[in-house]
Image (tube, rainbow, N blue to C red; front, side):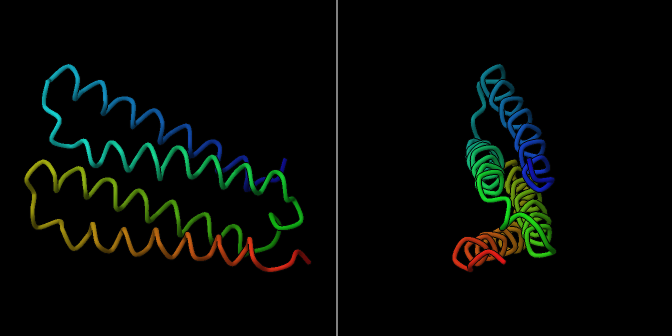
Length: 123
């Protein structure tokens, strides 16, 4: 399996653990104000990272080179920044809204880089 796939699957599992922990905390506390962050961590962190890892595993010719690693780091940094700042924003820290926006744009850049990988021919 390509190294980038391993990175994505390991990162996905970390996001899943965090997402489930937030879900359990919301359930125990009966306070669901961070459900948006919980959903983003699970969908963008766990599911999408696993899909990216699967794609690279199924297309090893596209998993090599610098672009997949750049795409990985851009995407993961974006999701971490967006999810963490969204979590804190939903807790009432409204000053973090610009960080949520920045994280969202970085995440989107990671998705666009992945689209480039998918649509360009393998070398």
